[in-house]
Amino acid sequence: MTKVLGICGSAAPKSSTKKLIEAALDAAKTAGAEVEFIDAAKMNIHGCKGCLACKADQAKLCTQKDDMTPLYAKINAADAIIIGSPIYFGENTGQIKCFIDRLYAFIGPEGSRMKPGIKTAAIITQGYDDEKAYVQCANTLVGGFSHLGATAVEPLIVGSLHTADDLKPETIAAAKTLGKKLAE
Image 1 (tube, rainbow, N blue to C red):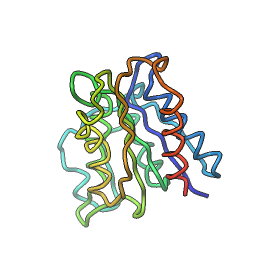
Image 2: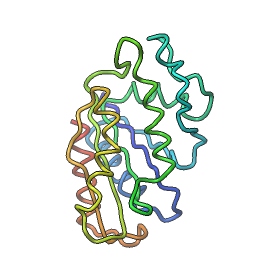
Image 3: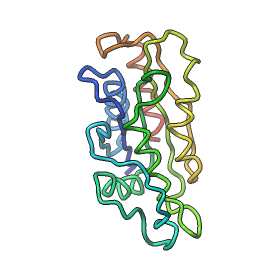
C-alpha cells in the first residue's frame, strides 16, 4: 500500500494550505493510499545547529531531541510527501523552514539515508494574485527532498487566498488531482 505524508507549515486557524493538503490526502486515501497529516507549524522543531553529528555515522540521524525526531522515520516510510506553506512576507513560513533545514540530517558520510523513490509535491498558498511569483518557494519546499533523491511533481500554487473561506471548488479539485497522482 502506498503511504502519503502531508506536512503543513501553516499555523493559521482557517488555513487554506491545511485545507488543500487535507483535500489531497483525502483523494490519496480514496485511491487506496495510507495517509497521515503532520501539522509541522504546531510542533516543536528547532533549526539545524550545524553540529555535523549526523555526518559522523551513516546509521545515525540528528542528535537533537525534539518533535522532528519521530518524523525522520515517517518520512522514510512514505512513498510520497506533500509539503505545504503559505507565503508570509515573500517566503515560506519559518516553521516549515526549520523542518526543511533538518532534512540535512538525511545526508550521512556515505550519502543520502532517505529511502529512494519517494515522490514529493509542494502546495503554496498566497494572498498575492500572481501565482508565478512564488514558484521559488515551491522549489524550496521540495528542493531538500530532491537533493536526497526524491522526485518532485508539479506543484500546486494558488494566489488570492487569505483564509480557507477563499478557496474555490476548482482549487480543491486540483489538490485532489495532486493527491490521486501521488497515490499512484
